[in-house]
Amino acid sequence: MGTVTAQILIGSAHPNHGGILPTHFLFLIENDHPSWILVNENFFKEGQGDIQGLTWIPTVENTLEDAILMTTIHVSRSPTIIELAKRFNSAIEEDHIQLYSALDESQRKQLYLQCRSLPDLPKVVISVLRGSMIDRQFSVMEQYKMDVEICRVVYSRLYSPWTNKTRIEGSLNRV
Image 1 (cartoon, rainbow, N blue to C red):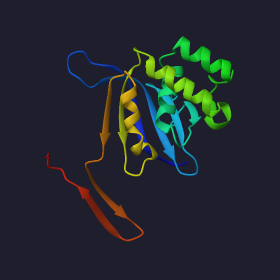
Image 2 (cartoon, rainbow, N blue to C red):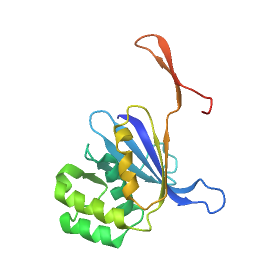
Image 3 (tube, rainbow, N blue to C red):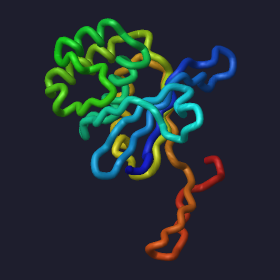
Image 4 (cartoon, one colour):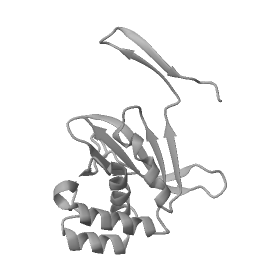
């Protein structure tokens, strides 16, 4: 299994206090190939430690938009998007999808455009770690109407067993 390089909380904004009331979580797992794993709020099976969820193998160039598409289909359950996606591939709602083979580039672009026009997408909070493949894809979020907060690393202290050294980057002082 790869490592988590980003996570997305999906839910609704609290009307008085900000933040988010999450209903689902998305984890971006990277290494051999990236995967988005979508889990609902109670993602551990009772008595087990295994995470139960849906898995999408995203496209490299649109990994973040693939997460929004996954959210639109599996969390928001947008009839417009689901109907269009099913016309392209009837298996779009299955537990495991590889987007490069499930949808061609033209189909994915049509779905992204439709998602961008939806006024009622849930709020997302995106936390991204250094080196994540989505770190350079955030500008696309300007094209969506959803509430969004993006959290990047401002400070890290990481030990490397390869160099036997600790590297500190960033600052804990607010600028």
